[in-house]
Picture 1 (cartoon, one colour):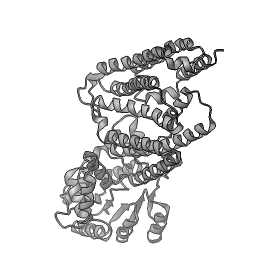
Picture 2 (cartoon, helix red, strand yellow; picture 1 turned 90 degrees about the vertical axis):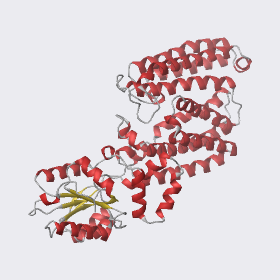
Picture 3 (tube, one colour; picture 1 turned 60 degrees about the vertical axis):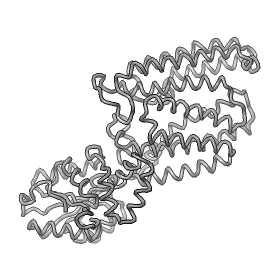
Picture 4 (cartoon, one colour; picture 1 turned 180 degrees about the vertical axis):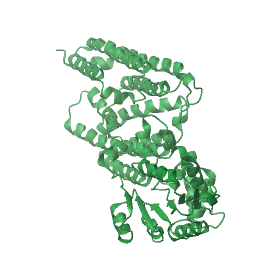
Length: 493
């Protein structure tokens, strides 16, 4: 097994030792899944290597994967109530041993980080090739306890695999276990202590798929509005496209969060996301993402093959962004602005209306400005004296001034394109009084200047600028003012 974290001979012989499982018990997640995600994030083709390693057995897979990548023990989520219990037991002198089927190196690093365990046991494929779970774990614990003069021992676990381990324990603790497993355990250990499982709530799932972000997909309706179309059939088609786009976006948000777990866990706000906090498991997130993506494309083809092609382009670009592009300075904000603009194109394809080049130009500059707002808000949270790179990004705090200049210039360019549009042939055809659109220019200009002012004052607190706008009364007033100006210019009233 693994080398001891502390001297085993120092363990008190008169106290029944407690052996503690890692995956699903001490941490709500699974370090094997965490390692696999880190490996795939490094290179998507590594997924094929994982499948090849699995052919050699689970123990060999864990050994090879741990040799390549290991999750940072300091960034893993832990079951805080149970960890507090372990600290109390450690303080009163009870021997604690971390016993897990995870690779021995991961187990040792977690034990060293938490500093409450006297020893650790883990899968060591190089030594014996045995995956330390079920009967193998029970045998290893028995041997470990007897070697230290203990005939009786306690075990804390969470899964059905642990039933075989509990069968050899004189004391049982269930942590984060389903009710059915707790019932089965209590038939053999009526006095089993239970640390209740946090149920997966609908609100948690909705937070994980970022349902609030569906508001961005309202951009699909903009081409219809710009074309002044009131055809209910076209609006119904775009509504179908809206749902498909929302499902697809939510699926890719889950993929992004899976790949960005280490960085999210050290972020002041993102560490509360369900995946980062461990309230939503990795397998459940993968299954949910796959189901939503499949449903999205079923709906997309119902809308039109052209729309499905646009949605495929969006999916591919978003996945590329999550895997690599988000860490490339300047490329990331161009991609973000392009993804917003792509929503306009998707709406035009779904409705069959022509997308104005003027609208495209305004949106590219405006959304580039908002993407830079997001990056500046993130950098504002960092210590300006810290020269280190922002976690998961390609920027340094000293880039803030340059990014702010680019962002404000992009916002002003969007307003300039709007003013040039007023005298174009397009506006003369669509509006009875196009000159009234001049009133929209200072309104939009004020909104752009205000959001940049708030970014500099750190009032966005790293929040997405569009999400900020949705809860900002001034932004709603700006939208209503722009709509009123457009209506009056259209009707001439």
